[in-house]
Amino acid sequence: MQNKDWPNIAGLIGTDKSPIGILGAPMTLGCVTPSDYHLAPAIFRQALKRISTYDLETGTDIGGLVIQDHGDIDIETLSPADGFGPINNAFASLIQNHSLSALIGGHNGVTRAGVHALDPSLQNVGVLTLDAHFDLRSTKDGLMNGNPVQALLDDGLPGTHIAQVGIAPFANTAAMHRTAIQAGITVFTMADCRTHSVVKIVESALKTLSKSCDVIYVDFDIDVIERALSPGAPGGRSGGFSTQEFFQASRLIGSHPKVKAVDLTEFDPALDVSDITALIAGRWFAELLMGFTARS
Ligand SMILES: [Mn+2]
Image (cartoon, rainbow, N blue to C red; front, side, top):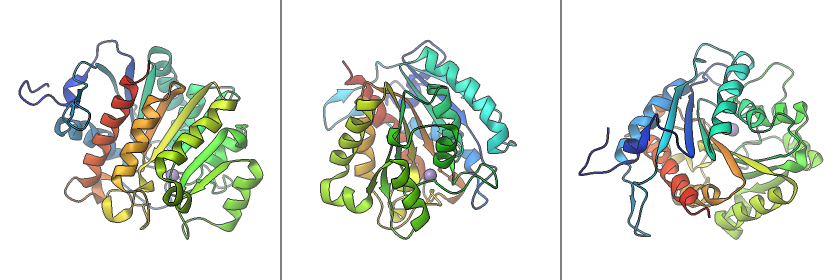
């Protein structure tokens, strides 16, 4: 419900047709460690009530936007393998009807289905991940939140159509790094981000993917953010993005015309403190919207 005196992002959400659609994907089974990721879509929507539509820093009010909410997919009790079909079907329908579609996880296991929804052939889609991790764990013991990128490679997504930003030291294995390089994945570490700035690195990643791909899917794994700044992300490590860097990257990505679908993953509200990560998630969406309004 819109508060007339304090227009907020939650007030833009309804069931009317819109260029922007959101879909909750509360996937929680199939994790490296047991978690409560299924709580995230509802907490995300709650947080939007606390995010004003006005960007004071640019003097821009996005209160004129409309966002169509498609609710949540019923996948809380499903494994990543069983949840693939429902997410894929529902999200494909969003993509047909919106210029920008956002999948609100849930853990990172939702990403594989999201990418398939954007391009079932996997030959024209570029995938950009903002993530501390490669997500290249083996798929031999089944799908989980630590292997969506490996699963996509297994499915036939060319590694050269993948760019990964924010990969953290001492949080991945040498074997994963070799796999990424051998597959032709463009890898930008946290050190690269510090040296060149997150904005420059994300610009470069989008440019690279744009050359070979018609559409781009972006996985925002919230654990790319510095752990001390975001307690609701169990995978986060010290030395990650600042929240400001995360917001700048989100706005830039939202403005890119080839970005048709995004997801927000790995937010576990049960671990959050003082709504810190919830408010980051809400602001992430506001930044995406700001970027989207800049598309010509
Ligand atoms: Mn991840």
